Picture (cartoon, rainbow, N blue to C red):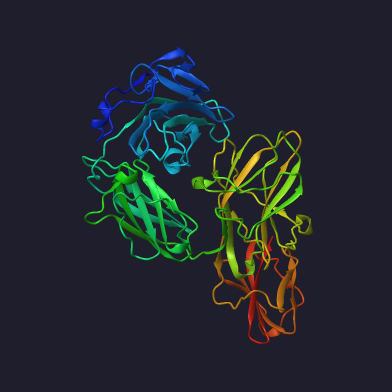
Amino acid sequence: MKRYLLTIALIAGSWGLLFSQNLVQNGGLESWVNPTTPENWDKAENISQSDVIVFSGMYSAEHTSADATKDLQQDVEGIIEGVNYHISYRYFDNDPEARTRIWSYWLSGGSTLTANEAELRPNVYSEDNPDWQVFDVTLTAPATADAFRFEVRVYKQDNVFGGSVYYDDFVVEQAGVDPEPSAYPVNFIATPENVSITLSWLDATGTQLPGAYLVLASSTDNIVPPVDGTPVEDDTDLSDGTGALNVFYGVETCTFAGLEGNSTYHFAIFPYTNGGANINYKTDGAWPEAQATTANIAVIETENFNNSWGAWTAVSVTGAQVWERDNNYGLEGTPCARMSGYEGGSNANEDWLISPAMNFSNYENELLSFFTAQNYTGPELEVLISTDYDGSGNPASGTWTSLTGTLSGGSWEWTFSGDIDVSAYNGNAVYVAFKYTSNASESATWEVDDILITGTELVGIHNPELKPTGLEIFPNPVTESFTVMTSGDLTLEKIEVYSITGKLIWTSGKDGIPPAISAQTWKTGTYLLVGTFSDGSAYSTKFLKQ
């Protein structure tokens, strides 16, 4: 077998750290009680000694994934509040059946502190790479901190386990104050995709490398650079016109999502060293800037549950357990909607989380997306949609159709649903719901976050919320022919049918509106029907041709 051994590799700009005391006991994993227990480590689940894939020295720790998360952990003593600490370790992941990430805390009297959540408990997992990689950050120990819990985790990947990742050279040591970075990153690019914008760049080089970058965002071209000694917290909500993200050196990308459609956003990136009161930004000269414009898409409904339930309603049909949001388990360590039927054991539950009524009549090309995380065994979360739910609270008042999206496979792995096409559903009161079920023997925990429903606003059509004059199609979906029904005192004088791309397919013309309109020769897909009434007003509705 090939032996991977690197003995001289160093992080550029970190020579001075070599002479600091490493507070991690047996950080190089050279001493073992037995082949599955490294000395001085408090928890070593699914760990085994390896002399094949090694970064330095004779041994590393092999961490094998299982159906549930497995930990390697040591509580590091001797931390002093207000002091800068250099925290790093090496990891090797080139196995499609395992992935890893750090999940660490500052400690105070044995209790965990919430500080530096983005850096120490990131929502980013490792990706397969044929080379050793490094986690490296300098942070200021928060008030009352007296220890540091160094923990790394291994997870199954794509619901498959049995693969391995490797660790070596764990370090926690006092760090000096580094000067500001020598240079800015290059090739700073903003790339739009629907109502998200992804930033990418190539890492800065030079004699002093940054520990991380601050990416600032603004809806206007007026970005003000940060100030040394004043850290900027992550802010992904750009509804107030500004936002920020801190990104580790080496990641080279980040994304702002849930933006306004057809809007231009401006971005700038600032490398920095140190942390806390010693944070040192590079702001001289011309910092890299980029801008991008989102697609002409409107946000119909969005909710991240950070501050409240918003307009969403939790409905408990069966069982004592209910949806809750008093947690910090969501994306970016903020609250999410969370449901579990476990309380002293598994319990039978049926609980719904239902959106507000949404007027799809004003839009086309509607898309639904969200994130889910899940763990333990139990029925899968259902994603449903209804156009006849009366909003009364009791889901039984409506007819619900299942939607298909990508859901989390477990191990608390946050998973993007993908863009779910819901453009076939129409009306001025469309509801989306998440239905949780459990039973007396199985009760998984499901979490939902960052729900987004978008659509393209109809252009050139007077289409307010439906007034007493309504416009409906029977049947819908259409197979061979359909009838147009109206309500109110106005007379329907003309009908036009458009393809989803805007091409006129059929019009009633001077011969008037027939009692039944044939659609036999039309292709399968979504169509827009526009009705013009006797007062000149126009209303629209969508239908599906099967």
